[in-house]
Image (cartoon, rainbow, N blue to C red; front, top):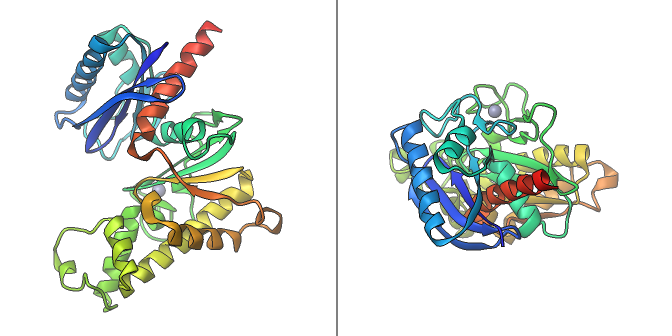
Length: 318
Ligand SMILES: [Zn+2]
C-alpha cells in the first residue's frame, strides 16, 4: 500500500499526517509554524517527514500552503501574507533535495477542495465548487474529479471576485472583493463596527480593545439573541450568497461545499445561505443548488495535499 505524507502549512500551524491513496489518515499531528522564515520552515518539514518515515514506507510528499503556488514547479509564487519569508520559495525542489522523495505543492484551498471531493462532503460528486471561509476566503473548482487551475494555475480564486464596486478594502490591496465581506474576519469586524454604531450587543463593553471574537463566538452570540451579531451574520450571509450565486451561474456545479471555521456555523446559517443563493441564481439553476458544510475539518488540507502527490505518482507510472 502506497502511503504519502500530507502537509498543510498555515500562518499559525503546520498540520501533517500519513495518508493512504483513498484519503484515510493513519496518523496526524500539528506543530506551530516556525517564525524563522524559509529555512526554519523547510527544516521543520524535513524533520517531520523523516519522523513519519521511521514508522511508514513513504512514497511521496504533498504540501498545501497558504498563498499562490506555481503547481508545475511547486514554488510559492508572490507574497504569502500569513507566512513571513515564504514568498518565492521553491518548496518542491528544496524538500525533495532534503528528503529524496517526490514532492507536490499546491495552494491550500485547492488541496482542501480535492480532499472534500474525493473523501469528504463531496464524495460521489465530480463537479464541486469549494469555498473556505477563515481569515480570508479561499476557493477552488473540481471538475470531472480534477482541480480546474486555469491557463496559468491562477484560476478558481473566487475570494477575490468583486461583489461591490469600489467597496471595502481587501487584504490583496484591491477593493470590494468577496473576501472583504464573507471571511470569518470580515464577519467579526462587521459585528464590532455595528457595536461601535450603537447596535445593542453583549460585546458593547469588550469592543473597546479586547481580543477580537472569532466567528464561532459571533454565531454563539446571535443564537443568544445578540442584535449586532445577528445583523452581522445576516449581512455576511447575503454577501456570501451573492458571491456564490455568481459562481453557480458561471459553473452550474453539482455541489457547493463550504469549509473553514464557518462550516461549523450550523443549519440555521446554511438554510439562510441557501435562500440568499436561490434568490440570486438564474431561474434554471435555483432547483439544483446544493450547499453543504465540509466534512473533513482542519485535516482537509493535508489529506488533499497527499492525494495530489499520489495522483501525480500514478500519472507518472501510467
Ligand atoms: Zn482581494
